[in-house]
Length: 187
Image 1 (tube, rainbow, N blue to C red):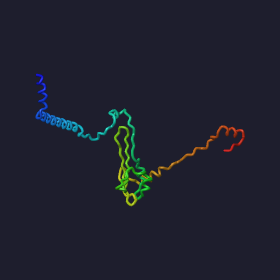
Image 2: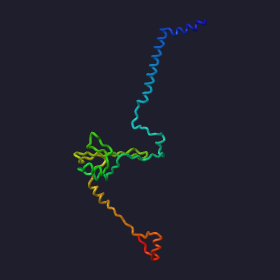
Image 3: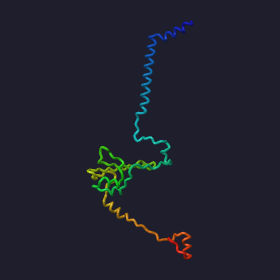
Image 4: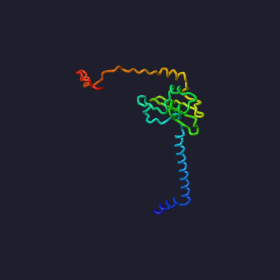
């Protein structure tokens, strides 16, 4: 019976049995690969809007400090009120600063964008778009429109009064002593 074992091994390597076995292995591996691809791609296909990675799960807790993040040009309504249609680019740049976005294909358009996220609050965005023709400001679009009356009122309110304190005798102890004795010092 020692040859029965050899016969069994020889049957496994018979050409028809071997080809059938290999064909079944190839089909089985193709099915497994296809099933794995379908299962793993099903998880990635689900989109979640407004779901951005926010770091740690703990960062959404109310007692976790999130610093205020500001980006862009800080543009106030007071600054916009000083802008007037017909100004040239240099005058506008002096009042509002260099624009955050300048488009190479639309050189007549300047975009000022300001975003701020305060702690756990949603992000606030302010956008101001200026249009130029022949180096003159022709249009303003965005969160604020210029109000010349408000600009004049702000200038009138901006009167600065500086109070100069009375002169105090802040001379040093040696100068005061010499003056008390009667010796004049040069100040």
